[in-house]
Image (cartoon, rainbow, N blue to C red; front, side, top):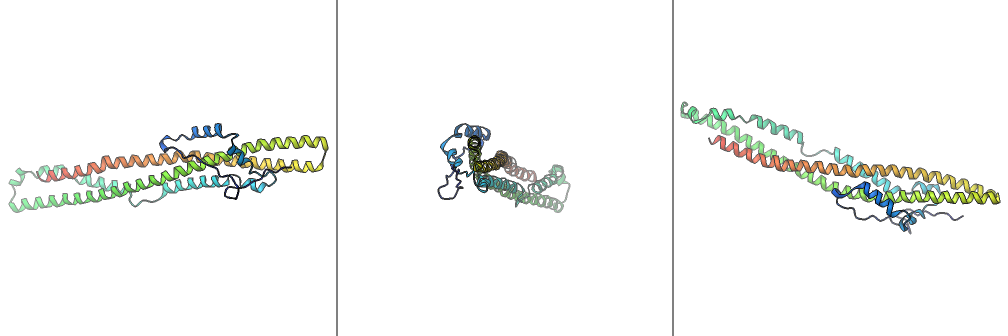
Length: 283
């Protein structure tokens, strides 16, 4: 019998699965990509080359079939999870709580009571003391706002850096997903060819009753079952990849929303708030 020889990726002579450069994340539709690959790659030379690496008489090599992209897909999922749980240098919750405390400290009534009419009823020394106390209070508030603004900038920088890493993770995940699909298609084609090969051996055995053929059929049927389970494992890895790729985009979108809020709300509002403080204490 002619074995279907296996050469794993990375070994001399092994075909290297190629992956087209994925489009931008916001344009990528993984369901459409999966259908496209299924329609265009089945029976192609690239899939035939992967099928030819399967050795039906060596189940150990079947167990390694498609192992590399499957492992990399799992690693991408781990990296995504780690990025979600990684601590940040700035605690946004604490930062917003501090900002709320500062806003609550601002007392318009206090400023309104300390108007020119009330000052006229005070001695000059008392007037100066009241003014100094209020100016010191709001000077401290301005300093606190400056510190919060610095923290907001730091947090914004962290979000932008995280999104850069998410881009790298997205493209890596798409690349390994494409490789994984090719191994799945090759495995499914290999199962069909093995099934035909077994049927031919059984027909030959019915004619010759050769006991060696009986042993050969049992070996091929065992390899068929092993390859069948291997393809199922690769399909499960494919499901993981199909869930991870949109998750990366969701993380990026969430970070972008937060960056926009920092830019439009805090980094614009804080200077305006400080200007209002200045104008208030100037009467």
